[in-house]
Image (cartoon, rainbow over all chains, first blue to last red):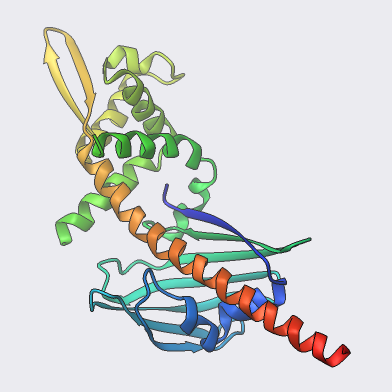
Length: 146
Length: 121
């Protein structure tokens, strides 16, 4: 549960999805938890290059995250480090991995944000702990919504 | 905020070990259990189980009560709930973002197809 995995099936070819993930004009259209605007989107899409994105939420709060591209394999894979610079109380560096698989309809995107609360050395422990913890998470969600 | 972070750190550190996760999963099913009941499925000695219980107790994930020679262990939900809420924020962020990413990429795909179609036509 120290990592988050999401899958999306997208009716667009992987190269278009990849560019939407990395180009500032694409990021400006999708980044953020609500319909609030993206204020800054800067990317330097090569291994070792950095990105920085700042957005405002509808409640007026501003948040900024930044990181470094660790793997850039257009159009199938993108890995980057991730850190909140402001607006969140979480200063840890975490890791975002995005895999794009071509499908007859377009692309299957697998997104993983890992090491959300741990040093990199704990990464190896994460494989295999999701199943057991998903049950715990469901358990506590059930309890917190009586 | 520092305390909140420290508590989250203790929770995730406690959850990093498979034996401790198995203990919590057992308590989730049974609500309470004695220390010897908790130790029985594991191929490790009672003192090792006691150490794991100390870590879980230190993180506030369990409470212990003693009656005679029997120690009863019970799950405490608040730290787990905090950890779940914290993860939910990430999930909301990315889930909404990826939905809009998909819509944006599909619109770009449609534009590209239209442009290609015009060239061919």
